[in-house]
Length: 271
Ligand code: KIV
Image (cartoon, rainbow, N blue to C red; front, side, top):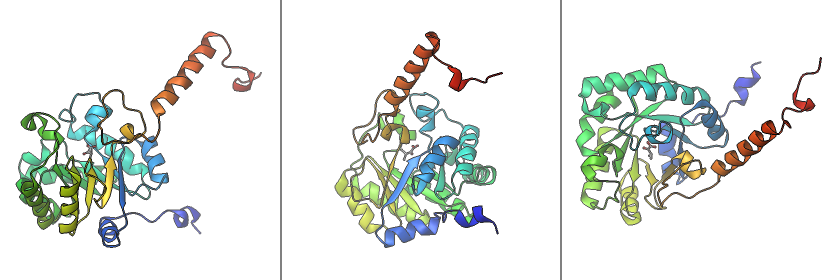
């Protein structure tokens, strides 16, 4: 009998997210960029992992999300996909993958599913991306849309600003749903508008800076764990201060090495 298989947790799937909305169970999603963190998050019971293009800022140290490449996303997604036993793993299509034509976008998203163990892609856009979403879904590639603040359009928007155009938000989210998206991230939108979107849509809304009424919530994991060096948006709640924990531990280790206290006999091999 294969015990490891019987102990494996039940995988969260695209249809199970829809079911969670119907049963009014909140959906949790956090970003992950590597095997170690993805294992920890998966074991902690998060429903969905997002290999976000925020990796450009969080992991690579760029000032926005634009520089990360498809190959880099796939490299990291493969690690996360291999770690996740329970969570559904969604991978961001990096700028400007979904603007290079439908054929090219299906090829790129196809690579994501073929070369990683991830189950879905996310793309920024709504009404303007309806034909792309429909083509991906038609090819068997589940799509999470992303409306409101679109970080890949930072230069067009002139910065990271709260999005208040209610009609456009509804048009974008509805078009994404009609095109076959299974969920939609709603970023930096007033709570009342996010609530309206959540009530009108059949597919789940996953909010970030969009108030408490979305069907689920997503955060950048480094922000919520206190690992971010620099600016953290005001909508992020800090659940730990891991940056200080690491600094304290490393300072102590450096001191002990310099004083000749580490390694002691307990951490050395005897003859
Ligand atoms: O890239 C990312 O981390 C995201 C989330 C902020 C939703 O798109």
